Image 1: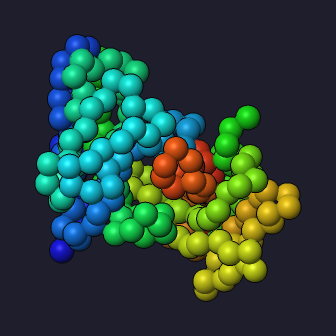
Image 2 (image 1 turned 60 degrees about the vertical axis):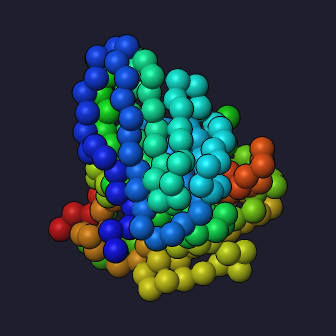
Length: 113
Length: 112
């Protein structure tokens, strides 16, 4: 039981490049979330999903797209990376909508030059 | 004003010390409250929930004051392994989902 995994762990991009971050969970959780964490700020929700085939915007969705084609996977895409998207990205999942059951992945560090 | 505010620290304390962190939140409709722990370059992990009556888990005690809109975390008999950043998390229902609002964290460094 791996829990929540994220791929890649670290990536460097040039401005304008695109990439996809993959989050996978093997706990059969319905809810999945993408956050970003920046120095001096709390984690901020980018997008979330309440089940396979559904996605919704969080607090800071601009510049990102997501897809949830399979229940266990939640993909975060950057179509045209900008330096402001340099951050640590965390994926999380929960069995229910209640936050105390939230499990985080190990994070992806992204540097956009 | 930030929705959830914490003193960033760092709090530098010797082993065995008692240390307390406070966190204030702006939304009086907040529903649930938590403390998460985050080790350097790692993911956040739930430390404990915070209930109105206060709750204790070993050396850790959490308190909630709804009237003043703050929560606290007390760590007794600090260990080296307690060194981490402690995140205050508050939730409320908005925009169709339960929003988790994270504080920026308070860093604790326990030294021998």
